[in-house]
Amino acid sequence: MTPETPSTDSEVTALQEQAAPVCVMSFNASDASGAGGTAGDVATIAAMGAHALPVVTSIVMRDTAEVFDHHVIDSDVIVEQARNVLEDVTVGAWKVGFLGSAEAVSAVAEVLSDYPDVPLVAYLPNLSWVEEDAQQAYLDAFRELVLPQAEVLVGSHQTLTNFLLPEWDSDRPASPRELAVAAAEHGTSFVLVTSVPLPDQFLDNVLASPQGAITGEKFERFEVSFVGAGDTLSAALAALLASGAELHAAVGEALAFLDQALDAGFRPGMGNVIPDRFFWALPADDDEEPEGPETEIDDGNPPKSPRHVH
Image (tube, one colour):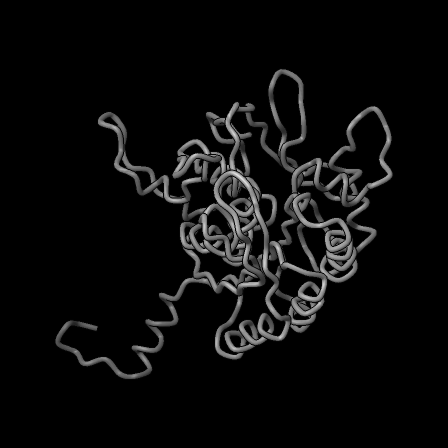
Protein backbone atom coordinates (compact mmCIF):
# COMPACT_ATOMS: atom_id res chain seq x y z
CA MET A 1 0.00 0.00 0.00
CA THR A 2 1.52 3.36 -1.08
CA PRO A 3 0.85 6.73 0.58
CA GLU A 4 -1.44 7.56 -2.34
CA THR A 5 -3.51 4.39 -1.93
CA PRO A 6 -6.54 4.83 0.31
CA SER A 7 -6.76 2.13 2.95
CA THR A 8 -9.90 0.11 3.50
CA ASP A 9 -11.51 -0.35 6.89
CA SER A 10 -10.40 -3.97 6.96
CA GLU A 11 -6.78 -2.97 6.27
CA VAL A 12 -6.83 -0.37 9.04
CA THR A 13 -8.31 -2.91 11.44
CA ALA A 14 -5.69 -5.49 10.50
CA LEU A 15 -2.86 -3.01 11.08
CA GLN A 16 -4.30 -1.96 14.44
CA GLU A 17 -4.60 -5.56 15.58
CA GLN A 18 -1.11 -6.38 14.37
CA ALA A 19 0.41 -3.46 16.27
CA ALA A 20 -1.44 -4.06 19.54
CA PRO A 21 0.75 -5.28 22.41
CA VAL A 22 -0.32 -8.23 24.54
CA CYS A 23 -2.35 -7.31 27.62
CA VAL A 24 -1.68 -8.32 31.23
CA MET A 25 -4.28 -7.82 33.92
CA SER A 26 -2.78 -7.01 37.30
CA PHE A 27 -4.75 -7.40 40.52
CA ASN A 28 -2.80 -5.44 43.10
CA ALA A 29 -2.94 -2.73 45.74
CA SER A 30 -2.59 0.96 45.03
CA ASP A 31 0.79 2.09 46.37
CA ALA A 32 1.21 5.86 46.23
CA SER A 33 4.99 5.58 46.67
CA GLY A 34 5.19 4.01 43.21
CA ALA A 35 7.53 1.31 44.52
CA GLY A 36 5.19 -1.62 43.97
CA GLY A 37 1.49 -2.33 43.70
CA THR A 38 -0.37 -1.32 40.57
CA ALA A 39 2.05 1.56 39.88
CA GLY A 40 5.02 -0.80 39.85
CA ASP A 41 3.14 -3.35 37.76
CA VAL A 42 2.13 -0.79 35.14
CA ALA A 43 5.70 0.48 34.80
CA THR A 44 7.16 -3.03 34.60
CA ILE A 45 4.61 -4.41 32.15
CA ALA A 46 5.04 -1.34 29.93
CA ALA A 47 8.83 -1.69 30.06
CA MET A 48 8.44 -5.29 28.87
CA GLY A 49 6.47 -4.11 25.83
CA ALA A 50 3.03 -5.20 27.02
CA HIS A 51 -0.09 -3.26 28.01
CA ALA A 52 -1.17 -3.26 31.67
CA LEU A 53 -4.76 -3.57 32.83
CA PRO A 54 -4.50 -2.56 36.52
CA VAL A 55 -7.30 -3.58 38.89
CA VAL A 56 -7.00 -1.89 42.29
CA THR A 57 -7.71 -4.33 45.13
CA SER A 58 -6.88 -2.17 48.16
CA ILE A 59 -5.13 1.05 49.09
CA VAL A 60 -1.85 0.70 50.96
CA MET A 61 -0.78 3.68 53.04
CA ARG A 62 3.01 3.69 52.91
CA ASP A 63 6.15 5.57 52.03
CA THR A 64 9.40 4.16 50.68
CA ALA A 65 10.44 2.97 54.15
CA GLU A 66 7.40 1.28 55.71
CA VAL A 67 3.72 0.42 55.52
CA PHE A 68 1.43 2.30 57.90
CA ASP A 69 -2.02 0.94 57.10
CA HIS A 70 -4.22 -0.30 54.29
CA HIS A 71 -7.84 0.18 53.30
CA VAL A 72 -9.87 -2.65 51.83
CA ILE A 73 -11.91 -2.12 48.67
CA ASP A 74 -15.31 -3.76 48.41
CA SER A 75 -15.11 -7.08 46.60
CA ASP A 76 -17.90 -6.15 44.21
CA VAL A 77 -15.98 -3.06 43.14
CA ILE A 78 -12.87 -5.16 42.45
CA VAL A 79 -14.86 -7.61 40.35
CA GLU A 80 -16.66 -4.85 38.45
CA GLN A 81 -13.32 -3.23 37.51
CA ALA A 82 -12.11 -6.51 36.06
CA ARG A 83 -15.32 -7.67 34.39
CA ASN A 84 -15.83 -4.39 32.54
CA VAL A 85 -12.41 -4.69 30.94
CA LEU A 86 -12.59 -8.42 30.31
CA GLU A 87 -15.77 -8.00 28.28
CA ASP A 88 -13.76 -5.77 25.94
CA VAL A 89 -10.09 -6.85 26.01
CA THR A 90 -8.32 -10.19 25.55
CA VAL A 91 -5.91 -10.91 28.38
CA GLY A 92 -2.66 -12.80 27.76
CA ALA A 93 -1.68 -13.35 31.40
CA TRP A 94 -2.65 -12.50 34.97
CA LYS A 95 -0.48 -11.00 37.69
CA VAL A 96 -1.84 -11.29 41.23
CA GLY A 97 -0.22 -9.24 43.97
CA PHE A 98 -1.65 -8.11 47.32
CA LEU A 99 -5.44 -8.42 47.18
CA GLY A 100 -6.24 -6.72 50.48
CA SER A 101 -8.54 -9.17 52.25
CA ALA A 102 -9.73 -12.76 52.30
CA GLU A 103 -13.00 -11.63 50.73
CA ALA A 104 -11.12 -9.98 47.89
CA VAL A 105 -9.07 -13.15 47.36
CA SER A 106 -12.32 -15.08 46.93
CA ALA A 107 -13.73 -12.53 44.50
CA VAL A 108 -10.58 -12.37 42.36
CA ALA A 109 -10.26 -16.16 42.34
CA GLU A 110 -13.79 -16.42 40.95
CA VAL A 111 -12.86 -14.10 38.07
CA LEU A 112 -9.69 -16.08 37.36
CA SER A 113 -11.59 -19.37 37.31
CA ASP A 114 -13.54 -18.22 34.24
CA TYR A 115 -10.29 -18.08 32.22
CA PRO A 116 -8.42 -21.30 33.07
CA ASP A 117 -6.21 -21.17 29.97
CA VAL A 118 -4.68 -17.77 30.81
CA PRO A 119 -1.39 -18.20 32.73
CA LEU A 120 -1.39 -16.83 36.27
CA VAL A 121 1.69 -15.50 38.06
CA ALA A 122 0.88 -15.12 41.76
CA TYR A 123 3.18 -13.03 43.95
CA LEU A 124 3.10 -13.40 47.73
CA PRO A 125 4.71 -10.44 49.50
CA ASN A 126 5.77 -10.31 53.12
CA LEU A 127 2.56 -9.49 55.02
CA SER A 128 4.05 -9.20 58.51
CA TRP A 129 2.62 -5.69 58.75
CA VAL A 130 -0.98 -7.01 58.48
CA GLU A 131 -2.87 -7.69 61.73
CA GLU A 132 -2.46 -11.34 62.70
CA ASP A 133 -6.05 -12.60 62.35
CA ALA A 134 -6.59 -10.78 59.03
CA GLN A 135 -3.23 -12.04 57.78
CA GLN A 136 -4.07 -15.66 58.60
CA ALA A 137 -7.49 -15.42 56.94
CA TYR A 138 -5.87 -13.89 53.86
CA LEU A 139 -3.19 -16.57 53.61
CA ASP A 140 -5.72 -19.37 54.10
CA ALA A 141 -7.89 -17.98 51.29
CA PHE A 142 -4.86 -17.45 49.04
CA ARG A 143 -3.73 -21.03 49.65
CA GLU A 144 -7.15 -22.51 48.99
CA LEU A 145 -8.36 -20.34 46.08
CA VAL A 146 -5.39 -18.82 44.24
CA LEU A 147 -2.73 -21.54 44.41
CA PRO A 148 -4.86 -24.12 42.55
CA GLN A 149 -5.03 -21.71 39.60
CA ALA A 150 -1.43 -20.44 39.64
CA GLU A 151 1.16 -21.58 37.13
CA VAL A 152 3.94 -19.88 39.08
CA LEU A 153 4.06 -18.73 42.71
CA VAL A 154 6.70 -16.04 43.30
CA GLY A 155 8.06 -15.02 46.67
CA SER A 156 11.14 -14.72 48.83
CA HIS A 157 12.57 -17.87 50.37
CA GLN A 158 11.58 -16.84 53.88
CA THR A 159 8.05 -15.77 52.94
CA LEU A 160 7.35 -18.95 50.96
CA THR A 161 8.81 -21.15 53.70
CA ASN A 162 6.55 -19.53 56.31
CA PHE A 163 3.56 -19.86 53.99
CA LEU A 164 4.05 -23.33 52.52
CA LEU A 165 6.01 -25.09 55.27
CA PRO A 166 4.95 -23.37 58.51
CA GLU A 167 6.08 -26.34 60.61
CA TRP A 168 9.57 -26.43 59.10
CA ASP A 169 12.04 -26.87 61.97
CA SER A 170 15.15 -28.27 60.34
CA ASP A 171 18.51 -26.59 60.90
CA ARG A 172 18.94 -26.32 57.14
CA PRO A 173 16.72 -24.05 55.02
CA ALA A 174 14.00 -25.63 52.90
CA SER A 175 15.14 -26.18 49.32
CA PRO A 176 13.28 -24.68 46.35
CA ARG A 177 12.25 -28.23 45.37
CA GLU A 178 10.72 -28.81 48.81
CA LEU A 179 8.81 -25.55 48.50
CA ALA A 180 7.65 -26.62 45.04
CA VAL A 181 6.42 -29.95 46.43
CA ALA A 182 4.43 -28.10 49.08
CA ALA A 183 2.99 -25.68 46.51
CA ALA A 184 2.06 -28.58 44.19
CA GLU A 185 -0.06 -30.07 46.96
CA HIS A 186 -2.28 -27.02 46.50
CA GLY A 187 -2.23 -27.15 42.69
CA THR A 188 0.59 -24.74 41.77
CA SER A 189 2.88 -26.03 39.03
CA PHE A 190 6.07 -24.06 39.78
CA VAL A 191 7.63 -21.78 42.39
CA LEU A 192 10.08 -18.97 41.71
CA VAL A 193 11.96 -18.62 44.98
CA THR A 194 14.02 -15.47 45.47
CA SER A 195 16.71 -14.55 47.98
CA VAL A 196 17.72 -18.13 48.79
CA PRO A 197 20.73 -17.68 51.14
CA LEU A 198 24.07 -18.95 49.88
CA PRO A 199 27.59 -18.75 51.31
CA ASP A 200 29.94 -15.86 50.55
CA GLN A 201 27.30 -13.11 50.41
CA PHE A 202 25.36 -14.53 47.48
CA LEU A 203 21.64 -15.07 47.04
CA ASP A 204 20.05 -17.57 44.70
CA ASN A 205 16.84 -17.16 42.71
CA VAL A 206 15.45 -20.49 41.56
CA LEU A 207 12.55 -21.70 39.45
CA ALA A 208 11.60 -25.15 40.73
CA SER A 209 9.03 -27.87 40.22
CA PRO A 210 8.39 -30.87 42.48
CA GLN A 211 11.00 -32.71 40.38
CA GLY A 212 13.74 -30.21 41.21
CA ALA A 213 15.35 -26.90 40.23
CA ILE A 214 14.87 -25.85 36.60
CA THR A 215 16.72 -22.58 36.16
CA GLY A 216 17.82 -19.56 38.13
CA GLU A 217 20.40 -16.87 38.75
CA LYS A 218 22.85 -16.20 41.58
CA PHE A 219 23.14 -12.56 42.61
CA GLU A 220 25.65 -10.95 44.89
CA ARG A 221 24.13 -9.50 48.05
CA PHE A 222 24.25 -5.73 48.12
CA GLU A 223 23.95 -3.84 51.39
CA VAL A 224 21.02 -1.75 50.25
CA SER A 225 17.35 -2.44 50.93
CA PHE A 226 14.95 -2.39 47.99
CA VAL A 227 11.18 -2.11 47.90
CA GLY A 228 9.13 -3.32 44.93
CA ALA A 229 11.51 -6.04 43.72
CA GLY A 230 8.99 -8.88 44.03
CA ASP A 231 6.28 -6.99 42.21
CA THR A 232 8.76 -6.12 39.48
CA LEU A 233 9.91 -9.71 38.98
CA SER A 234 6.41 -11.20 38.94
CA ALA A 235 4.97 -8.53 36.63
CA ALA A 236 7.89 -8.96 34.20
CA LEU A 237 7.36 -12.72 34.21
CA ALA A 238 3.62 -12.32 33.53
CA ALA A 239 4.32 -9.99 30.60
CA LEU A 240 6.79 -12.43 29.08
CA LEU A 241 4.41 -15.38 29.45
CA ALA A 242 1.65 -13.29 27.85
CA SER A 243 4.00 -12.77 24.90
CA GLY A 244 4.29 -16.53 24.45
CA ALA A 245 7.73 -17.11 26.00
CA GLU A 246 8.54 -20.54 27.39
CA LEU A 247 8.61 -20.52 31.19
CA HIS A 248 12.30 -21.25 31.75
CA ALA A 249 13.37 -18.59 29.23
CA ALA A 250 10.84 -16.09 30.63
CA VAL A 251 12.22 -16.59 34.14
CA GLY A 252 15.78 -16.01 32.92
CA GLU A 253 14.78 -12.80 31.16
CA ALA A 254 12.64 -11.58 34.07
CA LEU A 255 15.52 -12.12 36.50
CA ALA A 256 17.92 -10.30 34.18
CA PHE A 257 15.44 -7.42 33.93
CA LEU A 258 15.09 -7.24 37.72
CA ASP A 259 18.85 -7.38 38.11
CA GLN A 260 19.36 -4.34 35.89
CA ALA A 261 16.36 -2.46 37.32
CA LEU A 262 17.79 -2.83 40.82
CA ASP A 263 21.28 -1.94 39.69
CA ALA A 264 19.87 1.30 38.28
CA GLY A 265 17.56 1.77 41.29
CA PHE A 266 17.07 5.16 42.88
CA ARG A 267 16.03 6.53 46.28
CA PRO A 268 13.27 9.11 45.75
CA GLY A 269 12.83 9.76 49.46
CA MET A 270 14.47 8.92 52.78
CA GLY A 271 13.56 5.21 52.70
CA ASN A 272 14.45 2.28 50.49
CA VAL A 273 15.67 2.08 46.91
CA ILE A 274 13.06 1.62 44.15
CA PRO A 275 13.79 -0.39 40.99
CA ASP A 276 14.16 1.70 37.86
CA ARG A 277 12.06 -0.24 35.36
CA PHE A 278 13.13 2.09 32.57
CA PHE A 279 16.87 1.73 33.13
CA TRP A 280 17.26 1.04 29.41
CA ALA A 281 15.83 4.46 28.53
CA LEU A 282 18.41 6.40 30.55
CA PRO A 283 21.06 8.42 28.68
CA ALA A 284 24.09 6.24 28.02
CA ASP A 285 27.53 6.91 29.45
CA ASP A 286 29.97 8.52 27.05
CA ASP A 287 31.58 5.18 26.24
CA GLU A 288 28.41 3.08 26.13
CA GLU A 289 25.56 2.64 23.73
CA PRO A 290 21.97 2.89 25.02
CA GLU A 291 20.66 -0.51 26.00
CA GLY A 292 17.02 -1.30 25.26
CA PRO A 293 14.85 -4.05 26.73
CA GLU A 294 15.18 -7.44 25.12
CA THR A 295 12.57 -8.10 22.47
CA GLU A 296 13.74 -11.66 21.92
CA ILE A 297 13.80 -14.30 24.62
CA ASP A 298 17.36 -15.50 25.21
CA ASP A 299 18.39 -19.10 25.76
CA GLY A 300 18.10 -18.85 29.54
CA ASN A 301 21.83 -18.49 30.16
CA PRO A 302 22.81 -16.22 33.07
CA PRO A 303 23.63 -12.60 32.34
CA LYS A 304 27.34 -12.08 31.76
CA SER A 305 27.82 -9.78 34.72
CA PRO A 306 25.26 -10.30 37.50
CA ARG A 307 24.62 -7.19 39.52
CA HIS A 308 23.72 -6.70 43.14
CA VAL A 309 20.34 -7.71 44.51
CA HIS A 310 19.28 -7.54 48.13
